[in-house]
Image 1 (cartoon, rainbow, N blue to C red):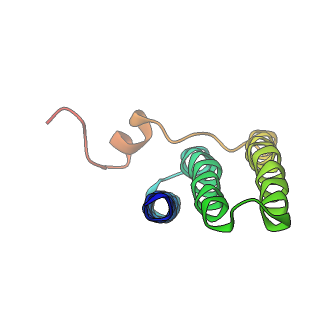
Image 2 (image 1 turned 180 degrees about the horizontal axis):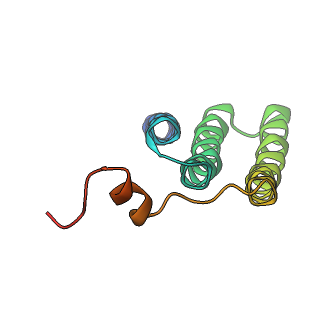
Length: 114
């Protein structure tokens, strides 16, 4: 009984993490500039590994593997936001401007007045 519940919870966490990873990948392709792409990638690159490693932890039980997975998760939770922040700072230092509504209206893009 308990093993079945753990398997279902693990499967849901693994599927959820995979879904968030795919959604983040779509956001990286669809968004127009580096800042919105960082938002899509940064949020999902933190949440997807949390769910995936959480699901793997449920499958592994209490073992040395669990400790290693927790260390990997800790490393990811510290480095992913730091890398996103550093990328945003580098984009600002390079003079990249965010795409605004006025930019898309001037270029003949879709307007939000419809």
